[in-house]
Amino acid sequence: MGMEKRRASEFMHLCDKGHVLLAALMLIFLLGIVGMTSLYLAGQDGPGVSAMKEDNVAQQLADGAADVVMSWFHDPSATPMIVAGLLAKRQGDLTSGPSFFDAAGRSQFVGTVERPDIMLDAANQADNQMLNDSPAASIMSWEDSAAFLS
Image (cartoon, rainbow, N blue to C red; front, side, top):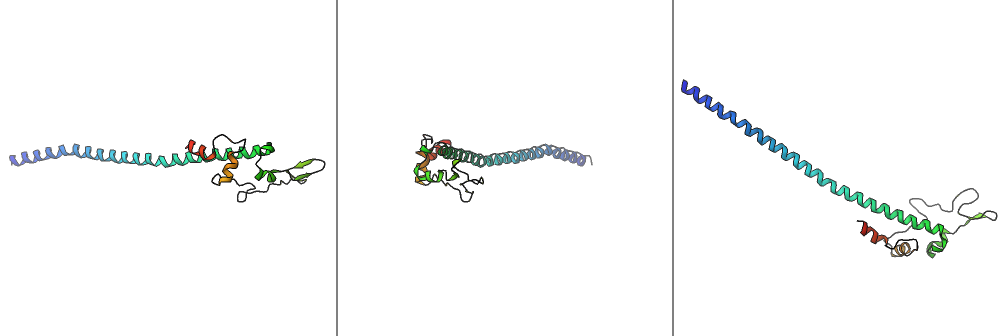
């Protein structure tokens, strides 16, 4: 009987030593999952940052185009001949002179988001040249500045 007790106690001591190994393996497994999750989430930030950068470039190009068109209103001599007729003051009366607005206050420009009064597309060669050859336009073309900013 003494021998069986000794073997049983030795077996119990061997089993006690395995729990540390099991805990270490579980900890390594959990740390591996946390590491893979953080790498996955870090990889997801790349496309979002890229999209934000493209949005910023598009916003800057739109602001620049708006500045060019506004300069056409302030300096009619700088207005390209293609759009000069559209930007001419067609309203008003003899007492107040030419105006963009009629007596009721309605503007001659009735463009909407779907149908703007002036539609300029940098992909169209004529529009690109009109925007970039304007004296108020910057030295760099819109397409070059998009490539420069990205």
